[in-house]
Image 1 (tube, rainbow, N blue to C red):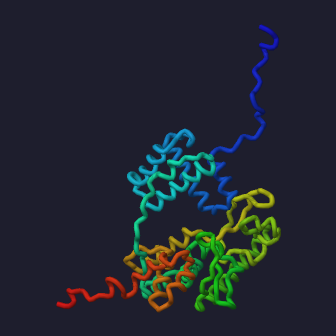
Image 2: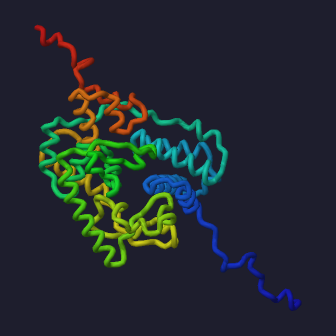
Image 3: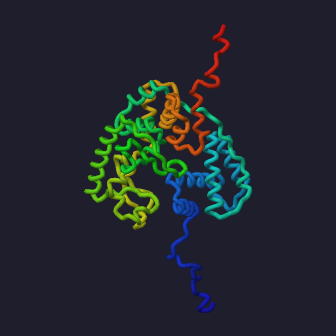
Length: 343
């Protein structure tokens, strides 16, 4: 045996070199680079992971239309998920193949889209709303009042920042609502004093964080780089901050480090408080925070406000979306005299 033959084989690559990110991490980076929301990021990655696990951890590049259809059918038949959930899973797989893997798969567009059923929204009567709100208190109670008084979605209310509450003009500016659109909605007179008291509590919490070396809030679109001190300023703080701090999964735009921040109140806290209040009130309807938005729109139409005004307050792109609330008016089936009543 020669001297060279006795030498051990050399590695093909430098083991110290950083490994390329795995598929799901590539997907996460891709979503963050394109400024998708953290909730969309979590949902899409979760669906991609479920798809891979469902097919025995095979790589998506090894799979095709049959595997995607089998997964979506499993969700509909075995899991019995809603049409919107099934369509979200399809959207995540579309993103995975077209954007991350850069694979042009025409068949993916042809995969059956679940038909979302047309449902009438659950609406509370003014008496039911009053009873529900009377059984809530604290920050979650104020958030529930805000949802009914302004028509905001739950996350729109939770992501409200100090600078977007206009007390003098009696209005609230909703930033980056659904569809990434800004809009203006009404600030109820009855909520001015409670909101001012909430801001005093939030400011005291912010000053306490600053004294402890924290107090940096998350800013969108790399504003923290453009305005280095803005994330510590009072104007950008959450109106409803969380009672505890946590590590932000998104790295800091300036340093790339994971920072301990104070997030806003978690949606689950408000959802749980609304369900508990509905249980104590004995409302015989499925009640969630979004029902308060439905009730806001319905009660405005009942009071005679123009549907275009309600459309703007809700932030609907098309008035046909707002038209669903006209079922409460005395038209159609509710505007006729039943023949039974004529006997």
